[in-house]
Amino acid sequence: MFVDFRKLGQNSRLDTDICIIGAGAAGITIACELARTHRRVVLVESGDFEFDAATQALYQGEVVGEPYPALDTPRLRLFGGTTNHWAGHCRPLDPIDFQVRPWISHSGWPIDRPTLEPFYARAQKVCDLGPPNYVADEWPQLAEFLIPFQPTRLVNRMWQYSPPTRFGEKFREDLERSRSVSVLLNANAVEVVLAPSGAQVTGVRLKSLDGKEGVIRARQFVLACGGIENARLLLDSNGVERDGVGNRRGLVGRYFLEHPHAIVAYAIPETPIARYEAYYASVEVDGIPIQVKPGVSEIAQRELKILNGCIDLGYGFDRSPGYLGIYHIIRNVRRGRMPSDVDEAIWRVLMDLDGAGAGLYRELKGRKALWFGANFEQAPNPDSRVLLSAERDALGAHRVKLDWRLSHIDKRSVRVACKIVGEELGRLGLARMRLDDWFLANDTTWNDLEGHFHHMGTTRMSDDPSMGVVDRNCKVHGVPNLYIAGSSVFPTCGYANATLTIVALALRLADHLGDRS
Amino acid sequence: MDRRTVLGSLAALFATASFPFAETFRHAGGYGAATRIGRIYLSKVPNEADADLLRELIGVVPFARESGDWKAHFDHLKREDFSKADTIIVDGWLLARCEARFCALLTFA
Ligand SMILES: Cc1cc2nc3c(=O)[nH]c(=O)nc-3n(C[C@H](O)[C@H](O)[C@H](O)COP(=O)(O)OP(=O)(O)OC[C@H]3O[C@@H](n4cnc5c(N)ncnc54)[C@H](O)[C@@H]3O)c2cc1C
Image 1 (tube, helix red, strand yellow):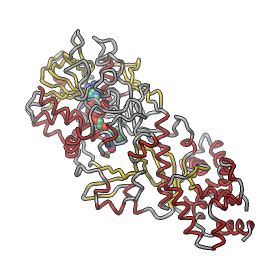
Image 2 (cartoon, protein in one colour):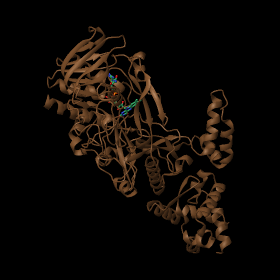
Image 3 (tube, chains in turn green, red):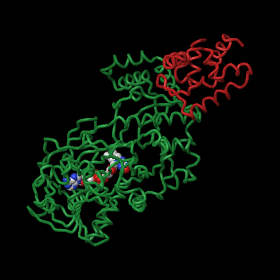
Image 4 (tube, helix red, strand yellow):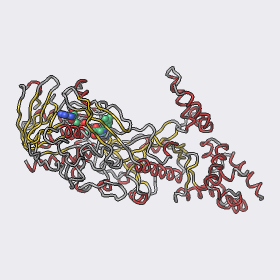
């Protein structure tokens, strides 16, 4: 059943067994699972079925640290959440992602991959994917597309593409028909209210943009507002505890993780590479679109003490400094203007006439180069964090401030991996790699850095309350009736896109809550 | 075959598509780029700045004597270097050690 919070009376009080805040991938998955247990559930959602600019503006925030797109552009604040425009690339985390790796500070989950296995299998169905098998070599139909890398160095990692499942559309009817689940639309959680002792949540304060207020009480609460917003809500709920809920150790908002992405190298194919389209495009196997990427083997990760990750392959133009200078000028001239930094671009051409000439020649001949990008995990870093900004939104809540930071090992790991890919392509006589100049510098700076819009780590999981905000069951340490769903609980993030793991963890949490309530 | 003839024939071979590395260095910007890479390599590995040593290291001497299959010889060397990760980044290009040495040898031609 759907209820519009704005139509309820002022200062309404609602009671339920389980209250879930946020109707995105995580919140909807939990609500649908709990619907089968006949527990009374209220799913609280800030938005409605359609996009609304004023609601979306509640997501605005400040960006400091590494550059990042405006915070109200990647995330979506309406029923179905960000899955209303996600791309659907799915892959589980690797077993090594869960392990303590001595060369990566703060690594290790309190649960392992086998624990999540049955939930990953169920998550495949939720996300409309194929069989839960991500071992490329075990898909005979893929064999002709795979590059025979030395398995001690590189492993072909595969992704399945979800249609992509729009969680709001897919589950709307189930939730509409459910007798036990009510979805409260246009209701913004603005404060998680603690008992004076701080030992449990008594309710969540709600507000709508047109001035309605209310409180929801429940036996158990689940925050499922996304990787940034979960931290924001905890930090801003400081009526009883000065630093916010679940934040006695000052960990809420810290360890923010993204999947850093940048183009780092290009290569000239030495043989036609069209047959390897599974890498730079996707191929369909039994109706499932599949993509493959070269990933660093576990052996190499341990030996070289690097993070886990893959190298993205794409098709495009050369990236030699000289050719990039020409490309920059041409692109601007085509748009009818001269670039403001034309001097610098010409200088780059002059300093690399060979590269400029070779790139131009290939461009004129229509011969594309391969390019390589980072698809890596980021190392946990306590200084990379989500904080509260001094500014407030239309509901009076503090906006967020994102301070994304990267460390030495992040760039080094991608560089080492890229070199291995270059060596393997060279060994096989497939392509010649040139690494971008900035990328070779042994520092922490990135050119044209982007994230993958995966916001993780801000309420990390650990059995030790001094190392994490939630325990292995996603329960907030010290607050026994408060749980967190979503990628904010990831203590390390692997290189896989986050949503399949978010859904697997949500299914696991739903089972846990279903057993308990 | 004397030293000058070996170097001269290497440079000439470089210009033909049949030479195994020719394609690689055409991508990188041709002969000029190859010799530039050679110079940079020698500045990074100065103890190899000796044409005779370089010829020996990449097997040019016995090879020229037997006038065997250049392409197979260099392809083999290159594959070995790449498999063993015996590579070097010069001017951004990821090169098998034998390729960098070959470029270095060209600077003596
Ligand atoms: C452009 C783009 C492409 C992506 N592609 C992929 C991909 O290919 N593969 C992949 O795995 N992931 C992808 N993602 C990430 C994916 O969308 C997220 O991992 C996923 O949606 C997170 O689910 P969630 O439920 O945790 O959060 P969300 O889906 O963001 O849902 C959070 C919900 O909480 C609600 N909410 C927030 N605050 C409050 C509040 N205070 N009160 C009430 N409700 C609130 C929001 O309105 C929203 O509905 C992509 C993201 C973007 C932006």
